[in-house]
Amino acid sequence: MQPIVELKNVTKEFYGVPALRDVSFDLAPGEVHALLGENGAGKSTLTKIMAGVHEVTTGELLVDGKVESFKTPAEALQKGIAMVFQETSLVPSLTVAQNLYLGNEKFLNRLRGIYISAQQFLQSLNFGVDPTMFVSQLGAAQKQMVEIARAVHHKAKVIIFDEPTATLTPEEKHHFFSLIRRLKSDGVSIIFISHALEEALAISDRITILRDGQHVITDDVKKFDRDKIINAMVGRTLSGELYGKAGDKRAPRPYGQKILSVQNLSMGKMVRNTSFSIYSGQITGIFGLIGSGRTETAKIISGVVKRDFFHGGEVKLEGRSVRYRVPRKAVKDGIVYVTEDRKLEGFFETKSIAENIYLNLLAADLNKGLTVSYSEMMELARHWTEKLNVRAINNSARVVELSGGNQQKVVIARSLVQRPKLIIFDEPTRGVDVGAIAELHHVINQLADSGLAVVVISSYLPEVLNLADRILVSRQGRVVEEFSMEDATEEKIMYAAVH
Ligand SMILES: Nc1ncnc2c1ncn2[C@@H]1O[C@H](COP(=O)(O)OP(=O)(O)OP(=O)(O)O)[C@@H](O)[C@H]1O
Ligand SMILES: [Mg+2]
Image 1 (cartoon, protein in one colour):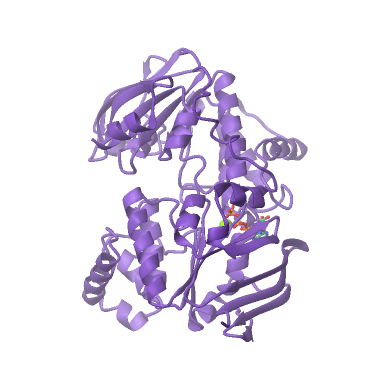
Image 2 (cartoon, helix red, strand yellow):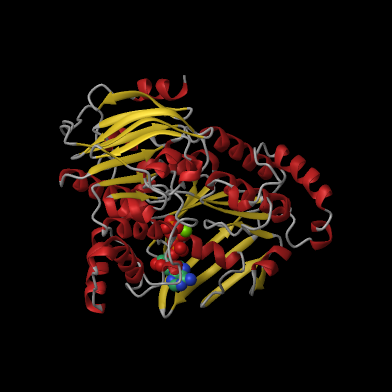
């Protein structure tokens, strides 16, 4: 069968440095093809060539057997190729419905009409998003749904999903996978990029793995299992290393000083009368389903959510009552929140890695009148990019040019230079590849060993179980139960989170 899209010996260079080297790839009609690889392996770059974002340096792109060279995503869309980007490409100042119908200006102005049809369309996809909301008001998961809905709405014959499930709840994922099956049965060809290897194994017909910009293997999904995929991704065996073996748990770290206490905190519908404490020198994991109020609580504590929305209760830092209006004040007192949403609350995208790290250092030390020279700035950046294994051409690379997972690492590096007493990681490894997860976990463990109070908010149970010395379970806006590392089991935690 003739491939619907094909890349032949494609090399793609940025500033003379290859991101893809001599890669060939083909997408068969009606197949689901998973594209896997570590952060920076070239997955987004490869698919962006098909979607008209990048042009090849050498090699060929063929669509239905004909050589094509798309100058813009609109040209690719005309040939039936749509892409759901890893970084959202929605217009925040427009409503959900307006974003869906963007490009269809005649329709766009008939407001009532588009809200009704957008409502019906979103419902048919089982996406619980209000079409009259502005995109700027949506959470990360809802934005992703709108992004997906838009691609489906274009009736493309090829849809590329670049990490579509990263922010979705288990139920939303379930809907998403039935959507994929439906699209497939309608004859749509799908490329699926994900770091969730189980998802790739469950949903795809074929799997292609990239490593360092090169093609490693393409084969039928039946030929793979988790270990084989990881092996091909990283070029060595990682299994066991990542989440330890069952039964060989380390001893929990002892409780240090009580750094933070939260008492009867409430805000709107998301945080309801929650109380808990955080101690130095250990990792507190906060597990809960998405929407259980964990992020909102963290944002109140760290001043990311303004005080106007603050409805009651108390937050005490080292025994002193605090109420932050801006994150900068919290940072000054030693509380740092590492956001889950690297795009929205992220950073100065057009500045370099080094500048981004440096700017945060300045923010932390503003009141101490600190100045740092250019060489010190570069040294600081080198230290952290090495420690976190950030992969880029060099530290002068602009953040916007990094792969998604590497951007996440820069967000973390940026926070660590602020030398916090309490650091809150919100979904720290989402979108981060298996190898880098191990590196990040190592860094998080080191922080706790060095005496910091560390909080890890995660929806991924193995991550919480592996990292946390104690686990708080959040449900419907409040912490409902606490487990020590010794008596935590997957079943007990899940039960507390759901019932
Ligand atoms: N616009 C750009 N300018 C310069 N370099 C870029 C650009 N886009 C990507 N790169 C580089 O190309 C390489 C591959 O990046 P790509 O985004 O394709 O990785 P990826 O496999 O999608 O990773 P992730 O899983 O982290 O999303 C990286 O080294 C990245 O820094
Ligand atoms: Mg990517």
